[in-house]
Length: 181
Image 1 (spheres, rainbow, N blue to C red):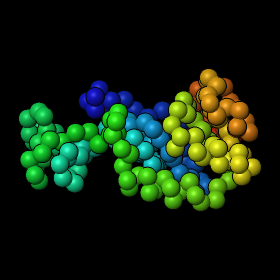
Image 2: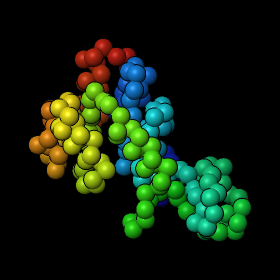
Image 3: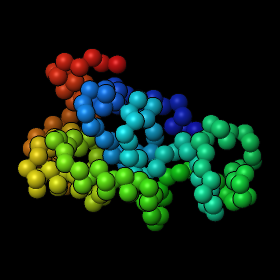
Image 4: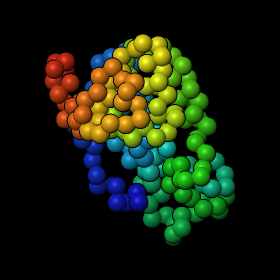
């Protein structure tokens, strides 16, 4: 799975989000995606709530490494050099709990005051993904949904842009006057 995604690259929408992080005082990205595109585009404040496909973790101990560092060291399945347990992609698989460190970071950030929420290209199926949008509505903060199709949260947002993420983000950033990377 990681190898199939290895050659894929972030799009200009990811670059715009990274540029927003450099332009504004506080920008956090909460992503369900496991592809690492936000980090590769330059975002530093990323909560990859479902993990990162380019990282490995031991099923037995706390050992973690990136896929590139591990490549070719052991046969498949990958074996933990610390305890001999099996390594797996550092992603949340169905039936697994979310990473506690990611949850703590999420809780800290979602409970801080915010000026704007952008909900971009998500089906909004998980409560923890919907929560920032629900909070924006509750606290009367602006919220923009960028998604070609309506979602469960569409009725709660201030503005809904029925567009793809890349096209919408690039247009917003150009209108703002920001330089595109």
